[in-house]
Length: 353
Image 1 (cartoon, helix red, strand yellow):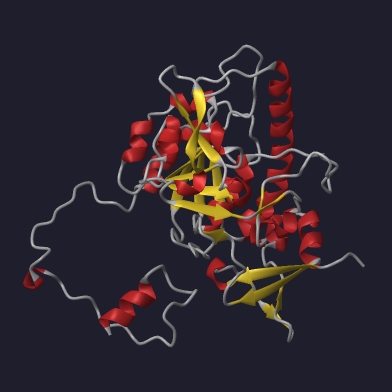
Image 2 (cartoon, one colour):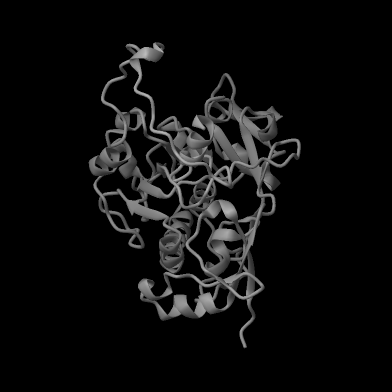
């Protein structure tokens, strides 16, 4: 019998599971609808345990636990990657109200995001991003005490006296380098691929990427509809391979193209698990080499993300109680928040009562 992976499922996930047996086991209900024998076989090897609090995943620079799970519960977000197609979009539209943005690596130098995720040396990324207090930054713990770099008077990159941990709005996260699709969403650390010596279940050796970390962390933060930009997933020697100035050697081009191929395969493995959790991912990159997720035009993605927001902000009468229509009274609730309710419904009813 194949070994059973034990996965701690936090209550915050609001996953559609059914209890079975005294041990609280649950099987993914989407196994049949996913239409995948591989998914069903994987589900049979998983024991999903519901718990009140999942193991710590995020930390402050001084080592305290930072629980940010579901802070964007059920919301949509745009993930900006660094491919040259990023510049083909009207990025000013991402500044509209209702749009949540996350960037990886130096894509944050092209567009100022709300969230930023990196996995490599802090020296690889602009100190203007590091120093920006309006950007929430997520940094692997092995990198958090390393120095950031700055430009001197001659525009040379030199080490700063400050580390990533000294920058504002920084959170650390634990990482691992052992990709296993069926446990990936609920591990107590963030997987970003495999190290060079490790081979995954499909025979792919090595291959790491910040995109793994971004997809996992956005899921933890509660994002459930994600639009991808700048995911060109191909490089060419002598071409502009980024949305920002950066040369690549022939060896780097070959290495990145291998990473894209493996990443595509692994994302295909992850997709049934994403769908089971209601985590919808769309690729808005024109001409992309990423095939694991369906294409959605950029303008349609922005329209979806902003659909619930008013066109104008009308503040007239908002401070006048007499001008407001009172909400309907609702019944009491036995708990502060029920997973069957819409976000904020239980809290609103509790306060109104």
